[in-house]
Amino acid sequence: MHQIYLGLGSNMGDRRQNIHEAIVLIDRQVGRVGRRSSLVETKPWGFHSTHNFLNCCIGVQTSLTPDGVLRATQKIEKDLGRSEKTENGVYHDRIIDIDILLFDHLTIDEPDLKIPHPLMGERDFVMQPLKEILSEDDHFDF
Image 1 (spheres, rainbow, N blue to C red):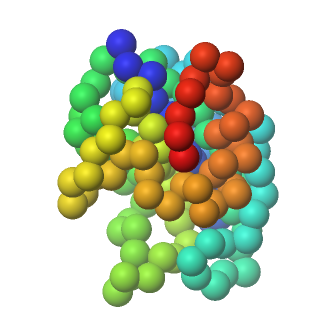
Image 2: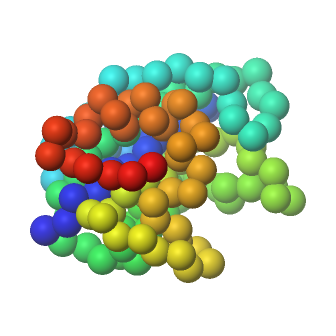
C-alpha cells in the first residue's frame, strides 16, 4: 500500500458538498481516506474571480500506481462536472480540483505528472491543511 496526499478545492456551487462528494468517490475509487484536514477558505490563486475557494487535504492509502491515481482523480473531477483545468493557459473557476501532492517519497517529473506537486510550497491553502494531517512519522522535504 502507498501513502498519498491529495489537495482538494472548489469555488463553484455548493463547495462543501463538492468536496464531500469528491472524498466519497476517492474513498471508493482510489483508496481508503484516513486523514482529512479542516476546510480553509481562500481567494483564488493564479486568476481573478469573485468566488472564493474551499480547500482541504486528505491522506489516502492506495494500491494504485501514480498514473492510476492520476487517471482516477481526473475521472472523479469529470464525473463531478469539472471541465479543463485552464482556458488558454489561465486557471478558472471550478467545481472541483484534485491535485496529487505527495506519493510515498517518490519524485516523478513527467509532462502530465509531477510529484511532489511543484507549486504546493507557494500555496498556503495547500501547505496549511497538509501540515495539519501529516503524521510525526512523515518526513517530507518541501
